[in-house]
Image (tube, rainbow, N blue to C red; front, top):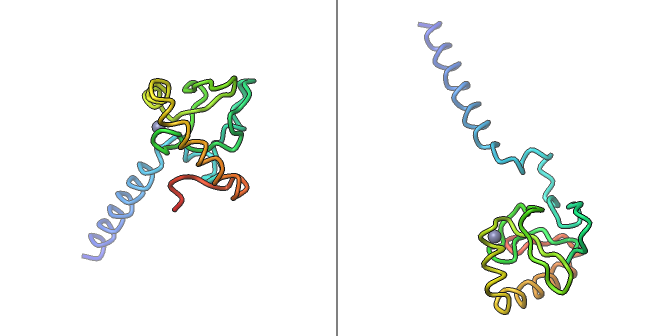
Length: 119
Ligand SMILES: [Zn+2]
């Protein structure tokens, strides 16, 4: 009886560890979980950043940002979390850009430590 209880306990622990590991499958979570990452400033593509502390997608507020998804505005680069969002921004810049500028102003007041979904 005792041995069986131990086996069940082991099984539960094993299942839990799988669940925890599966929850960490997001590649962005593997970098120490620093909430400051990733920001535009860390993308080393040589482009001038629209806002170097940009940490959120201007379309869906999502993260992380990717170097390959971007739109250049006034010679400055804005990054996105997906190609879809970059396309949306490009095709409706007059809608998204003012919101993004407002977000940047808020972020500046927080010394860059700010995201739209931070609350
Ligand atoms: Zn997005």
